[in-house]
Amino acid sequence: MIARLLGAGVVVAALGGAPFQCGSTSNPEHRREDSAGDALYALAMDFRAKGNEPAARDTLRYLVEHYPSNRHVPAAREELGEGSGAPAPAKSATPSEP
Image (cartoon, rainbow, N blue to C red; front, side):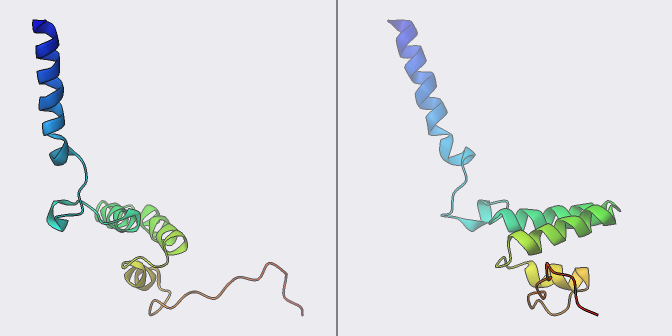
């Protein structure tokens, strides 16, 4: 009987801390990143800060290609030298004619 009460107490204590462990949108200051795109941009900046420019550029390209509506895409395009943040022209699958 005592073991069950202790077990129940442990479960209640663990669940009581859940809001501090789980992500919450109620307070934006407690979030680390807002989205996957934000995390990718932060990762790219971390790569750059550590001197790994190829990884930074690859990560920025992935961000631009897979999360085109993310708020960091215009900055990522600028850093990649792609201009003002406008979508890049689509690449043609067929070879150009002479």
